[in-house]
Structure formats: C-alpha cells, structure tokens
Image (cartoon, rainbow, N blue to C red):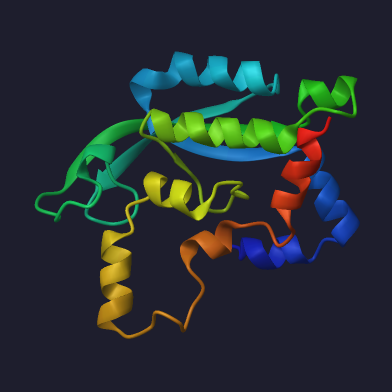
Length: 179
C-alpha cells in the first residue's frame, strides 16, 4: 500500500492546510446495524454526497481492531463481525456556503460518534483525536506487548503518531473556537 505519510508530505504546506481545514477525508468502520445512525450523523455534520459504503468483515484475532467488548482482554478465539465502511470525501456544505465552518470540530465529533458505536477510523485518515481517544478506539494490548518483547519501544513512532497530521491541529481547533 502507498505510504500515506509520505504522500501527504509531498503537498505544499498551504495546500495541506487547506485540505485539512476545508475538506473531509474520513473512512470509518462500524457495526452494520448502525448504518442509519451513521449516515444521519454524517449528514448532520458534513452534508457531503455521495458517500461510499461497503461491507467488511472484521476479524478479531487479538490485534488493534477488535470488538469493543474484547478490548484489553486476552485473545482466546477468533471472532468475526459484519461491519460497514463509510467513506466521506469532499467539501462540507458549511464550507461551500461560508468560510467559518468548524471542519476540525466536526471531524472530532464524527470520531467521537464512531468510538461511541464501537467503530474505528482507518489509520490512513488524518486523526484529530487525542491519544487517549485513539487508544479507546483501538486496542493497543498486543501492540504494546510486542514492542516490549522486542525492545523497540523507542525505535519506531507509535500508530497514533503516524495518524496525526504533521501540522498543529490543536492550534487550528483553538482558532475555530473563536468563530
């Protein structure tokens, strides 16, 4: 697969800022029974169409993407569950109509919703979550165990660090607060 961090870094800083502040590029997986709720939330936050939606089978084999009820528990048996993936790509209606749309706040609200329904954000998307929120979404138990076992805790970036935009989104979130 392409190295998304590298591809994002090839954009000029002004273009990258514009894409983060004025566009939404989000892919999220969530339990299939939450489809209506997820589409409604996407509409309320962004009004971006068309949406990409397709089924995916989540196989809980003890890695980072697990059923929420299994987070932190020792892996015993492989379990699978039908999820749907919802892709939201484009310019939110609020940006199309105004310059004061709080894109980053809306993305954070979307991420909060995804966590609340037991879903996950694909890690190639820019994450506006705090590290604590990211750890709530993804089970880090096995990952941490392997980093400890192979003594590589400081050798590589964390998954969270890899999903963070290379710019100071917290500063931008603060700016959006004053709109």
